[in-house]
Length: 113
Image 1 (cartoon, rainbow, N blue to C red):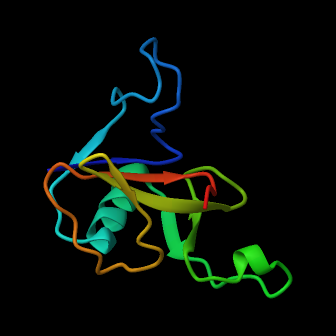
Image 2 (image 1 turned 120 degrees about the horizontal axis):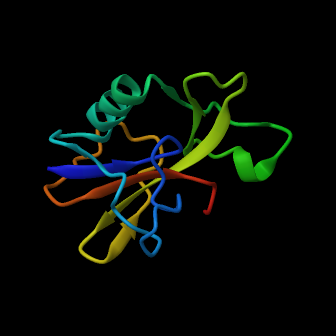
């Protein structure tokens, strides 16, 4: 099983416990990042698609971000996906075939790299 967090259930939303926390975790059992994103979309009525990049902004030119649009949102936002595994943080970029392991924490968050 893996835990997945994103804009709809952020580990940084205050719930009374120290942040980051797992109070709002969505627990899934999947094999790949693509399957995890599909499960998140279904659970939170969201759309997550690879971002094509921006020729006007070199920082956004590399294909590693995603657009996220949640239920009731008029506009999408960019998110960066990181996998937390055994004390390490992995940036799989847009590799939807990235293999997830039991115990992985998948986080869709603000652009940090």
